[in-house]
Length: 363
Image (cartoon, rainbow, N blue to C red):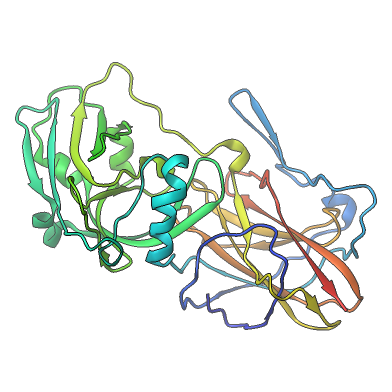
C-alpha cells in the first residue's frame, strides 16, 4: 500500500491479514482528538443486541498494565479503499483454509491450474423451459467490473479483489419464470449449492465472475470456470465451478447468513514483525485494514493507554462493499514498552467487539 507519508513501520503483529496493497493514493483525513478520559472511558454504542445475544465492545485489560500509557495520542491519519490481494495468495486462501471455513469459494486461476476457460452454465428449476447459456456470449454487452471484499461469517477478513463478470440478473431475465419463484441456487461441479433469496441476489448485483484481478478463471475438471461473487455477503455463498443455476419457488424464502455478531467490525494490524525496536522521537506508522461486511466503517480509533482514552479518526465517504485500509503515524518521547489497541465504528453504531493490539518498544 502506498500512502503519501512513508514512515518507518512498527512491529510485533498481534493480528494479521493477507491483503497486499497496490499503489493507491491516500485520502487525507484530519485527526480528531478524543475528549478527556472520563468521557471516553465508556464509548457510545459499545453494546448492541442481535437476536437474543448482547455483544459488548469494551477493553478487557488488566488492572496493572506494564506498558507506558499515552492519553489522547496525537498523530496523522490517512485511509483509502483501494488495493487487491494477489491472485496467488487469493488462490491459496480460497483453495485451502476456506474450503472448510466458508464452504467452497475457491477461484482456480489460469497460472495456478493450467486449465481451460469454460463459461457454460445450465439454468433450470421452476421455469417454463430449461436452457444452457454461455456467459461469455453475454460479456460484451452486460459485463460489470467491481472491487469486492471477501470475508467469512467468523474469522478475519481475508481478501479484496477486482472482479469482472456478468450480472446474475442477465441470466435470470433470459428465463421464463413460473409464478412465485423466490429462490436462486448456484451449484458447483462438486454438488455444493447455497440457496439465496432471489430478490437479495438481484439487489446485491450478484456477479457470475469470469475474471479476477485481470486474469481469467479456468477449470481443470468438470464444471464451468464461473464463480459467484456478491458484495457485502459472506464468502460461503461464493460458489465456484458453477454448473447449474436453479430458480425455484420455495415455501419459505431462505435466510441469508450474516457475519457472526462477535466478528462485526473486524480490524487487523498489518505491520512488519521483523522490526520491534524504535528510538524516542522516531516517526512510526501503524497500518491495517477494517471491514464490517454490511455497514460502512465511519471511524478507526486508537488507544495507547489500555482503553482509557481513544483517538477517533473519521473515514468520511467509506463504503460498505470494500475494506478500509488505514494508516496512523505518530511518535513517542518516553522509552519503554507500549501497546496500541485499535477498533472500528460503523454507520449503524457498532464498535468492534474484538479489538486488535500491537506491542512495541521505544528505546
